[in-house]
Length: 271
Image 1 (cartoon, rainbow, N blue to C red):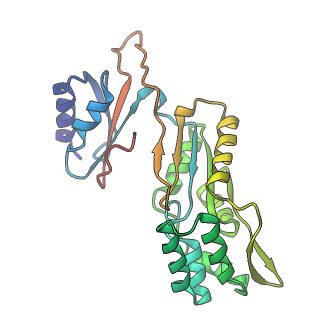
Image 2 (cartoon, rainbow, N blue to C red; image 1 turned 30 degrees about the vertical axis):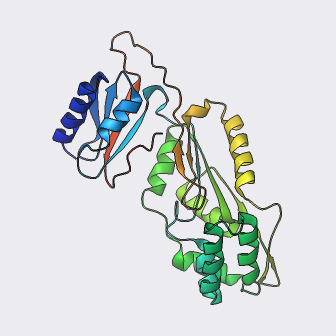
Image 3 (cartoon, helix red, strand yellow; image 1 turned 135 degrees about the vertical axis):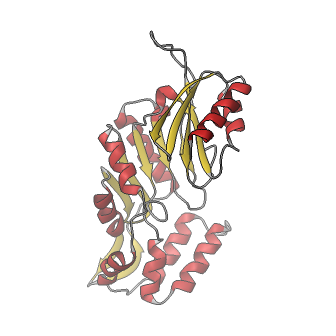
């Protein structure tokens, strides 16, 4: 991303009547902020075609720094789906995948799919979990930087997963999360029993943990970032709902911010 892309974006905002004020590089060649005063919906629309493979996020400038991030683990903070990898060690990966596909098609709810898949792992040696984690689990590029930067700026970070604590605990510690929540596999005599401790961590329990985190954070809900991961019914949702700006004493009114970042096109994440 170059200065020409910034100029093009600023020009589009001006032509659309969004009253751009100024811009600043966050990381030259990689990321920049452009501030503007009016009509974020139009701004998002005119910026979606700026440059080649540039991500665009439009949000109120006043709440750009988030106070809380809640993240999923599988295929989000790590590169794999843990239960699929465990199934590979048990020699039943196709059977597990078939249940997952049924869940993705809506034929099973999360609890049903989880219980069926875990039941197939019955008898798997406990040691296979640690072996799987060591050999298969890799932290997603950028995950450590994201979480540690958020924490350095005063945010609370929470890893909430429908997976298993034997994975979320070490992953959360390595990345730097404040806390983690996940399902607990039941184990006896060194082997999985094919069950999890109830109540399970499903969508409803995730919402309860989010509500508690919201309350404990003690800050505006609009300043929370909720990364719900890649599974069915989950989406990345950066909450940015307050569109009220404030005029500074020595600078023009600029309540909105368009963040441009070089990378795969994924415009409109600020919705």
